[in-house]
Length: 405
Ligand SMILES: C[S@@+](CC[C@H](N)C(=O)[O-])C[C@H]1O[C@@H](n2cnc3c(N)ncnc32)[C@H](O)[C@@H]1O
Image (tube, rainbow, N blue to C red; front, side):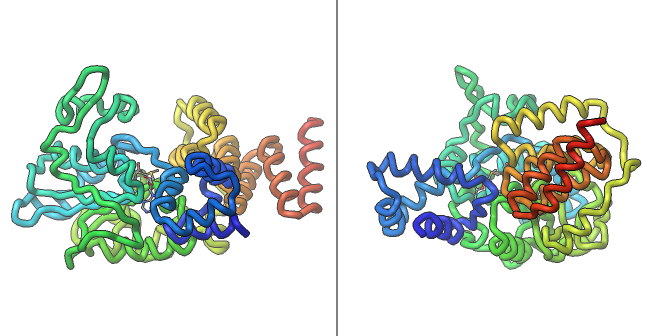
């Protein structure tokens, strides 16, 4: 009962769905904290944890996934640059745009939003960005505004010249005018720390958080997002979040690669939103819809698909299933006819403890390529784990037939 009560605490404090990061990650975090506190048994550590909020914060620092980089996914920032004027009019000092980055991690996202607006012709004072995260350590990094070239993942290096001061040894420091546009605060979606103006935020970036949350937090979190966004505002989620998000009336903008959602039909945009609610829970019902067999003629594969698949395997081998899944989902957006891609998505889902989604992905892979060995093997193991022995036996026979061909 000791471990479940600790998981329960993490669920209450930050909504963590332990399957999203895997139980071994939580166990490692606990071992690390027990070592730091000089405690050798879990029961005593639990007592300390429940008694001291600062210890809870320390544990939270170890279970969060702070991975972020500048202009991550590119498309949302291009979407913001292209649509800001059309959506909210000309830059105005009297009525500045209000934007939110939650979670902001170490600051790459809100600073990228600010650079996007500066470069789109929004002068200082015409927008203000709130940036919120649960991790005080990440927020300290963000406020300091010190980064390395790696934080740019080799992209948009020209922005370094415009918005950063290069210090010796490849260290880049955010220029003061950029730093002043972002206000960093500690909080969560459900314990939102800032006053929200009646009119709400023009744009909210809530990317790569929902995927880590349990169903209850995701539901309440998306409802909270809905309340903080203006009627003509835009919500940006991450690729992986889009499939794990919830049944709240948002509709997706036509440029699907940006994962931009409107809370209702926007006032005037060129990118007209699609009418149907596009953020849906991965419920059994919606999973059935998603499970619609992929059409072999859906799209043509990009020429660099083999190298993208190699990269996904590398990321999976490195143990970062969430990042691998994100990459799979991004490519699946254009390529819906590749059995190997679905197979890798299945592995990533499985590693993230998302059994139903893994099964769905492997079934799609097998629809496209009935003898795909890795998908067959993945499915067999999963069915065995679930106790569906006749199902597993069935798949084992298919594996034997596939191997004998
Ligand atoms: C993968 S990063 C995403 C950062 C950025 N949005 C991006 O997409 O690059 C996830 C962040 O979520 C934060 N986080 C996790 N649970 C949270 C919660 N319940 N409320 C607020 N932030 C949370 C973590 O501290 C971490 O910095």
